[in-house]
Amino acid sequence: MKTMKTMKFLTATVFVSLLFIGCSDDDAPEAVNEEEVITTLTVTFVPEDGGTEVILQTRDLDGDGPDAPVITTGNLAAGVTYVGSIVLLNETEEEPENITEEVEEESDEHQFFYTTTGGLDVTTTYNNFDNADNPLGTQFTLVAGAVSSGTLTFTLRHEPTKPNEGLEDAGGETDISAEFEVSVE
Image (cartoon, one colour):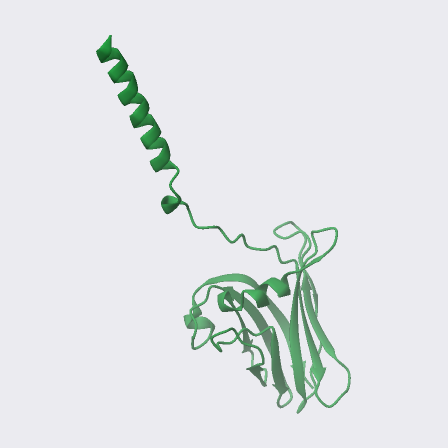
C-alpha cells in the first residue's frame, strides 16, 4: 500500500514537472508579423515649381482572383523635378486601411525600390529614411530627363538587407511590385 502511494506521488510529481517545463516562456515562439493585404498602390508626382500632378495607380481588389488589376498611368514633363509619394491601401475592408502608416512605422523592415527599363530617362532620390538612416522610400524626388519612354517599377521589399546596393542584392520578400508604362514628353 505504501508503494502504491509512493508511485502515485512520483507520477503526479513527474506530470506536474513536465507541465511546468512545457509551459516555460523560454520556448515561446516568436510573434508572427502577419503580412498586410495591399490592394492599391498610388504614386503621386507633384511638380516642385507648380503645375499638374501626375498619378500612377494599380488597384487589384480581387487579389489573385480572375480580374486583372486596373492600372492608371500618366506622363511626365521633360526637365521637371517632382516630389513623389506612395500610398498603400487595403480596400478589402469596409473602411479602407492605410498600409503606408504601418510600413513607415516599421521602416527598418521595409524599403521601396524604383527601377526603370526601356530607356526611360528619370533619376530618383530617397526623401525618407529609417532610424539607421537607410532608405525607406515612401517619399522621394524624381527628375524627368530627356524625352523618352519605358517602364517605371515600384517594388516594396519586406526585411531587405540594409544597407544595400539596390533591388538586386536587397534580399527580403516582395510585398508589392507595380510596373507602369511612362513617357517623358
